[in-house]
Image (cartoon, rainbow, N blue to C red; front, side):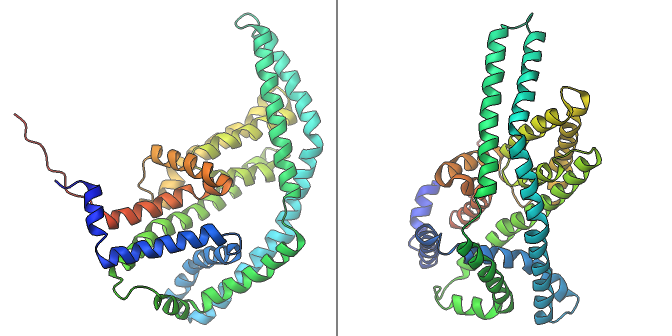
Length: 356
């Protein structure tokens, strides 16, 4: 039986395979070399792609496309203004308050670590326990301080921000309005025989597109329910922690563990070493269980048929290459790579070995 590598080398002589590889390499080089300059276009493409699902739903209701585009674009502008003038100022206020309370948070955690050290004196070496807890507190304080400072000061410059606010909505509108002419113009630069490329695009649209749409709705649903749950128990940091809980779904496995730290620390700071301090963690745990076992499978379905170990490898690999951006886009990139490889290297049937 021919091994996959030999099969792949042989298939490279196919003009359609060569054309597909040329398109992929050219696209990868453009993003690698001019990714910063193309960032507004890529952002607008992703937003237009997400909004296209709503346009298709309106079209199924016999709404003319141009009217559907204007309705969806108006909804997009409404959400953008809500984000910029309602949610973002509220987020900055809460982050500023957390930044001011960092010294008191650190003092509270140190007092708790001292109490835990005394209670564990008969089981462990008190000095080692206290040293370990203080080291953890200091690292958490440094990480929290850097995160808050980055979020408060890491807003792009005024010129860049203005360009984004003007250019991205403009591009989103025309990407939606002129979708068919733009696709037709782009297709003129593709190889003449592109049945294989169209098959790859169909697979990628089903895999990556389904994943992006599913994760968007999962993130939105989890962020809203988390905020409501934290607000019901009068958690002072409900907005920030709810937002982090929603964003945690974008980083498989690691996001859940990382967000647990601020949930625990902020809960202890507000209620001290009491059972009430565990309420935010309890809500967070219940929401994650519901999301992982009910919501995510229901929304994503069979979109991502990738083993968890492969996902973790992708997160580590792309995170080491491109930092935070690589971590967020690790799973879509793996789904894209998997879709392309399944077309380039068809799976050969496994013949059962004869047994004596």
